[in-house]
Image (cartoon, rainbow, N blue to C red):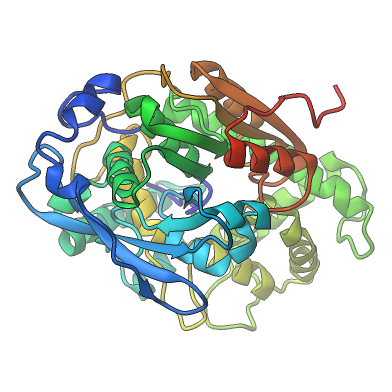
Length: 468
């Protein structure tokens, strides 16, 4: 359970629906005992900034629809023109709040898409305001995120195991096992179909990033004929094991770090004296070792800037080239023994607020990963999970657009190729760039193709924006 950064580890697999049904069989069976859920109509309330908020009710356990209900929190930004429907958005994680994402990113989709669609964000079950998973308090999380990620002695290894056991114990105590057993991605996909119906859309229009591509691909496999248009950006490969994904992600971060370093060499103020990737990587390794032996100085607060903090800061900064200037400055400071800037980057990655409290993203990430993909480091998790048992096909769906970025650290490009190949009607778009995911509502050729697809449902041309 060691140090899975909230946006570093998108989930890889999910529980099969508890009815045991998939594809068209699940579609046919869904309404029978779920009429009260599918028949909901949403009542929206203004919640500031032109946004409207609401929630839908879903069963905690889909095998017991007459049992406990939970609410899925939602937010929408109404269409600016003639409305064609709703666009559901998931920012990833698992554990990231779709409500917070939409509210904080009005420009996350283009003006052309906003004109035609209500932009709808939601917190998946266990996340944000949707029956959030609760585990450690702030001080315990401070200590947990500081545990040595590369233990050198038996004592350090035992300490890490002790913290993992405590984390699992507190999650069971503060969230209940009943909730933890039901936060899997198949349930979240079924919730999404209830949302689709409650929004009044006959078919789903969806934009998912990172883990959101896994959520979207499972939805597509369960309900292929209920899709209008679907974009999966920063794609995962649901057929991979945890070990396979871990190896690919390690290589992805190596590629991204090398790209950061080459950019650094061309930039004024780069802290690396020898401008070769090999020499700079050696310097980074020396920094990790130095912080492991003796923490860097911290003028920000009383916490130690140790190896765990430094590694988290560097990895987090690979997600966006917008973070690279901050990392360059932080590494310059670190070369002088000062670690406060690295600490602030790590805090952002870990979801730590300025007042010392945390969002629930990491707790939700662990809870969802451990029931979706139990072969990940979840040895002490209090409930059992199960991998989604097969490749996704989504037979009968319309074209589904899969987007891969060539130097994506967290979801390497090869995963997008694999997912697009698995889907019966997958269309692969290639973004030759750095950073995690591609679409941000801008005006690039690739983004214009995605916009046109979302608006018209016409499949884009895979090579229209590439040099090849």
